Image (cartoon, rainbow, N blue to C red; front, side, top):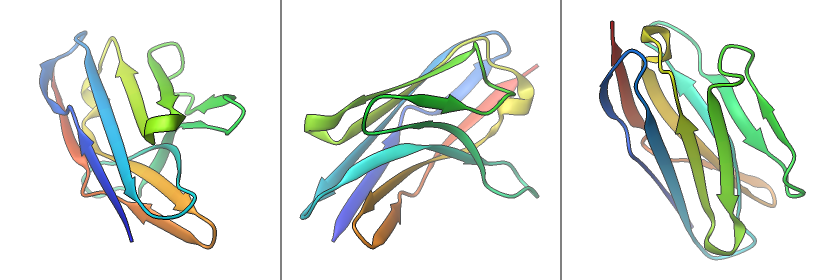
Amino acid sequence: QVHVVESGGGLVQAGGSLRLSCAASGSGSITVRGWYRQAPGKQREMVAVITSGGFTNYADSVKDRFTVSRESARNTLYLQMNNLKPEDTAVYYCRVTKPGYEYWGQGTQVTVSS
């Protein structure tokens, strides 16, 4: 079993910053893969992912504003979000895998006011 906990969300004004954290624990070969978000009435979308080799990929809407980083030894993932916009409002989820399985946490709410 793998346990995933996201934290760091909150209410912030447009132009502000937040840092999200994701902690994964459990048995087996766990890899924290990236951040996704889901706004009300919309499908879940990729925000930022990071490979085992440290390569990153971002959604066009967050490039140059968000930065994903990882502490592999601690199975921890971060998302630094700067210059937040109202359209960034969503529940943010962390995706974690181990061979043959995929896990998600409960998510953390980010609300950006204009």
